[in-house]
Image (cartoon, rainbow, N blue to C red; front, side, top):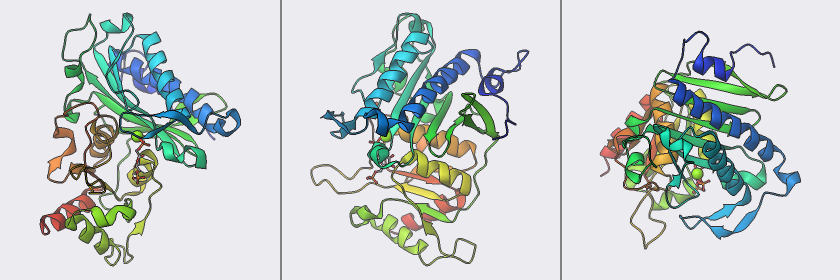
Length: 338
Ligand code: AHM
Ligand code: MG
């Protein structure tokens, strides 16, 4: 690969004070990028190292936790504690917020993350990823972060991003000034700017959802998805269905190519009210921030995703995210079937 792009450090912190982000936020992003390199190399050798497969416990959502998830989680927590760049953490793998180290209590930032999203794909060699979101704490620095520091709507995010461990390892982030993508050049172990100022197409040709659950969706969503199979996407061809079941991988493809991703509320569990699967704070909000910055839209039906006030760190939402025209057409169709 030709090394044409600037390095992540130079991009974020510049030379001669020309910074893309405040130094303290840049430090969190650089810490995460360092951890992601280690996760990427473990993901690549997971089969050999024998750390794929389940461990014998379930996470707070009752899902089977897999070894690599635990490994990625522990690595991120240990690294951020060691660097002291955040004052608290919230992870998909932990029921409660996670304390920083004493030095981190001086930081003004908290981070929420899904250490390894798409974990059901780990042992079948399909792309997985790490998603994160950074907020400025509400309480004064100099003490541990509290739950209130985390429970902020997504529009308060200072920065958000993801790493996708695919054919290459990529890092995509926004700090509110566009979306920038970096590719890991493995021979030198450095993220280089490969996709500056990503913009998503206004309309795509791809829809992504788990249609196996369609019988339990609301009618508006069912009618919309059915309509895509006969309707032309302005190209003379019907939409293509693409869904690998790793949110990061499905999102990344649609961001670059255009399209719509849906994880609607469903009624699969009769004991629970209809709800979505994905989590607001460390899955939906970070990618909603990126999607909006790239020119797209993210909603939970009639609510802008980034305006939802979280009820807790593991709050689940129904998500529709993608190209602007596609999401608008979804909403128009949905409104006709309530
Ligand atoms: P995970 O964080 O436990 O891996 O779950 C989230 C994943 C997403 O990556 C993906 O979009 C979704 O779950 C797939 O769910 P389903 O198998 O119901 O389609
Ligand atoms: Mg996840």
